[in-house]
Length: 314
Image 1 (cartoon, one colour):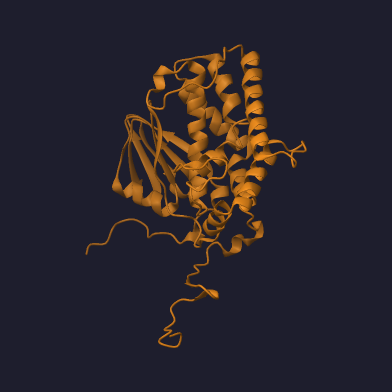
Image 2: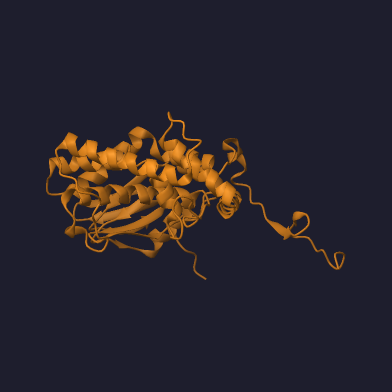
C-alpha cells in the first residue's frame, strides 16, 4: 500500500496540553488543506498556514471547503471543528482526547449517577457564581432561582449602560436573521463559548452529554461549563458590540470574545474548573499520557489485562 504523505501521527505527550493552546480561529470562504503539520487556508488573498497543535477550535463559516487530509491532521492533534452559519451553530467534529486514560470520564459518570454527588457538583457550580455569598443552606430550587435573578440583573444593568432595549432572550436557532441585533450578538458570543467548552471537555476525555445542572441533552455538560463564564465574557461583549452597530456584528463579536478569553484566561480556567468540579487532583496530570488498560472484575474492581487467566478462576 502506498505510504500517505506528511508527518507521522504525533504521540499524545508530544502535543501541547489543551490549557496551553490558543482559543479558536474563525475561517470563511476559503479552501482548507494540510501542509505537513499545519492547516493551510487558501483564498483570493493567498495562503496562510496555521499550526494545528497550537489551536483548540477551528470555526468554519460560510464558503469553506475542507479536505480529508486537513480533517485527519486536526483529529490527530485534538482540534475541535465547528461549522458556523447564519442558521446558528452545530458542533460537528472533534479530535481525539488528549489524555490516554478514562479517569475523568469514569469520575464524571460516577458523580452524575448518584443523587447526592450529583447535587454536590451542582452546588459547586452555583458557588462559583456566588463566591462571596453564603448559600450552603439554600436548596437546589432556591439556588436556581438565585441564578435566574442574577442573570436578569446582568441583562438589566447592561441594557441601561448601553441604552439597548431588552425584552428577554428571544431567538430561533434555525433563523438567525429573525432575531433583533442584541439577540444576534448574544447568539454569536455564546457560540464561541460553547465551541471552546465542547473542545476542552472532549480533549480532557469527558462526555459532553453527562451534565449536572443541565441534563437530557447531548451537550448538557457543555452548557454547564459555558454558563460559568457568560457573565464575564459573552454577555457584556454582546451588549457592547450591539450598541456600536455596524455591518458585521457577528464578526466583531467573535473577535472581541477571542480577545476576552485571552484576557480572562478562560481556556485555562475551563480546564482547572472541570477538574475541580469532578474532584480530580490537579497534580495528577503526569499520568495523563500513560496508557492504562484493565479488565473489570466484580470482586477486585480491576485486574491486569494481557494475562492468560486460563481456567484458574473457574
